[in-house]
Image 1 (tube, rainbow, N blue to C red):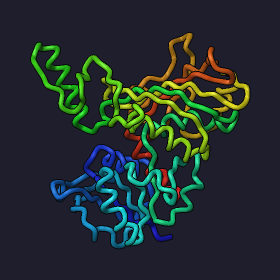
Image 2: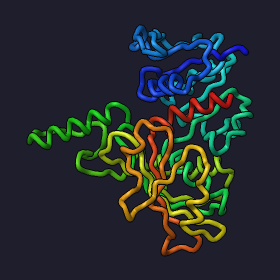
Image 3: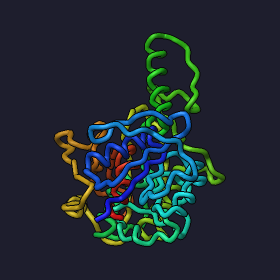
Image 4: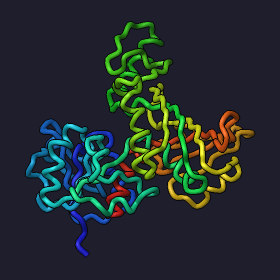
Length: 332
């Protein structure tokens, strides 16, 4: 068998580095590996399988002989360079929002809709938004068992979702506050240290942010539920890594907490951590650097019929981005 030639675009960024780590940890069957980034990062060396790989400058001619191109360098870079990679014969797995809602581009979570990856007429497959992935990892098994009708959710999103600058800003503000020094927020519109900010991404005309609408539109596409009703509030919290989502989900058929827990048995990528009497429930630190999402606080909603409340946590850099892309590559 000819082993695939894989390229990572945005290799020096947080998700690109995590993609490289996933390829190594999962023993992905590589023939060749090419690391691509901006001219500023060209020449850097990244460790992989005991050796060094030199980062090359990304150009439109970078994809000759590449079979799979993992993109994580932002929507603008994807729109400019993904067509070149696809035209050269590579299948692009894109982590940005550039192609997610295009009808001829599959939007894939391998544990949920793996067969969608088989049909990629443009040689492009999209990775969903990180919060959408984490929420649907918990909701998909429940949908299969009880028929999902609606979602009301609030997300609690780590500062690493804004990249390295989000982490730096949180650290600088904590230091400034604890030492009595002044500071001016740069990454976020308000102070993030010891605070929460109910805005992730830009607002749209209907009062929702773009991030909040991703769960609506992407959830419908991934689950094949064009009429799914979703209302979401996305909140930035002073946590380094791993997103949490509080979900109220209403179903077509009757459901209770015991039946819900049973629906998760044997499902890949999701673990039940739910013993609140002993203070056992998922928190962000439990999933940081881990593959699986965790679900807990499963209980019957007291307002809506056939509804559950639950709490799901996952590492947005790993399962919410890098790991999901590598799993799609494994499907290919």
